[in-house]
Image (cartoon, rainbow, N blue to C red; front, side, top):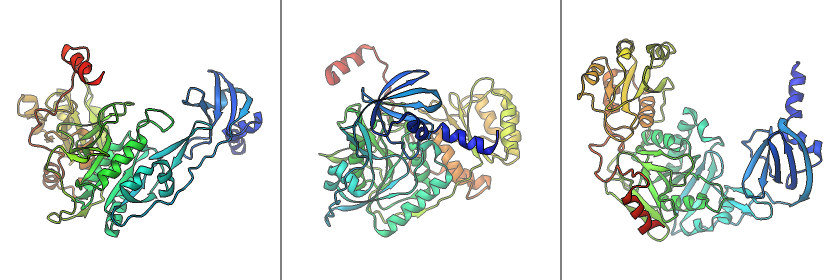
Length: 464
């Protein structure tokens, strides 16, 4: 098939061509007959990041569905609900007594409003749009927004990390008194980790925030998370932090240190958890930021140098160990030019014996290999068993209770500054901002199993 034919096929199968073919438009109520069934709802505008081969419907149930164009047999017109796919802008008020906060967008919409005519989610990002969608923000701060880039969170890469770090530096130098970063939730904790190393001792809060559920759902957390993030951005904790829902209710949000946070559930609103420690604070509109601990870097602290080190070596990877892992996997990684490997080992930091020789070979070739634990909670303890001590003799360096993704980000950041094994080890084992702690708090690890008597009592007394 010629390139012209290929181009025509792409056009023919696009959503726009299909709408024209069946004589329907955006905002029309339609019935679509597809290979997988019949769908009824309102045709929504295509998101700027969506592919052209799907038509998106707002179903009458309130949910959205994407129907793949090649699978569509026919579309019948039912009626029309004219929508307005823009949030009316209201001038964001400026109050000299409030802090100046900058919201940096990385993709998607940090806030939105529901169009009740069509059920569509209307994106909001400019200060005027945000004021219209979430007017509570004006009670908290003066807001400036900038879309740095627009990508899905899984497409974040070193280029975006460096750009964000440099943009944060620029805005703080201009006088920003707080930074909010709107970010997709799937890799939000990865970005929080790398920014914790790239942006050290900031004089103002740097708050990463997202939403698990869109604004067309009654259970949406978008506006509440943004209000909480703005409150944290004007608060006392000047670190890279993640601010998201705390409990499953909207009672309060949690502020997590950027090096100790992880997304722990694919869909629930209270998905982010501090691992191996306790959160930095709670936050709500009434009480503001309520610290749970006092070892945070305070706003305006001039005792430590504010510095930005936007470096990243792309030749680093994570290996999640599994039984019967073969040595040719590590050999292939080294032959591909990788300079660093973070292993998420079993138990106290172990791998199987067939890997010992190839690990010794890899470290002998100058590859930096560090051990973390796939349990997430707990410490690497490689002196307890013979196999741990042998792995250390092979050149593996244990990383205490550093989380695997955080170790990956720190090793990537470190290896772009030095390749000297002694210096790399020194940087990796010297905490920058809580990525290694002396111990876990006794009330940190609290994972309860459902259906047990004490949990049923707790749910009955406090939640139900």
